[in-house]
Picture (tube, helix red, strand yellow):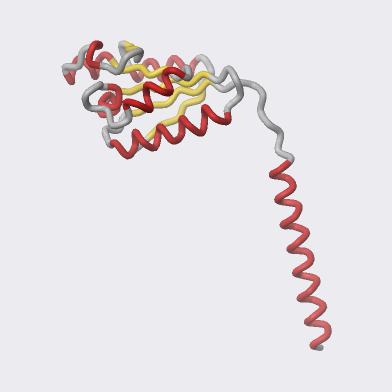
Length: 150
């Protein structure tokens, strides 16, 4: 009886080892995407921790996405603060990603409500009349939508 249990135990271990080997091999042989992405990201959070989280995601995107990938960040509501020169906790990162081709746009409706003028925004950020309509327009054109923050 002990011999049967021992053999059954060893057999189970060997099957588990084979399954684990096959799983790790499938991860290694995953095909690399060559087609560029088009990604629009919504930022509505005022929280600096959410802004920092978005910067980490942009690092992941810009370091691994295929060449030609387009990324646009649409900031409205509380997210506008991320693009205001004297309020942004991630200003240096925003400037870095602008240099890498990431587009940052502010909602003009939010700007008006918060009394923010275009000259108060980080250099080379853009603006759109309506952040929500910009998101809808990009999605209508086939862009992938991601909501950043809470």
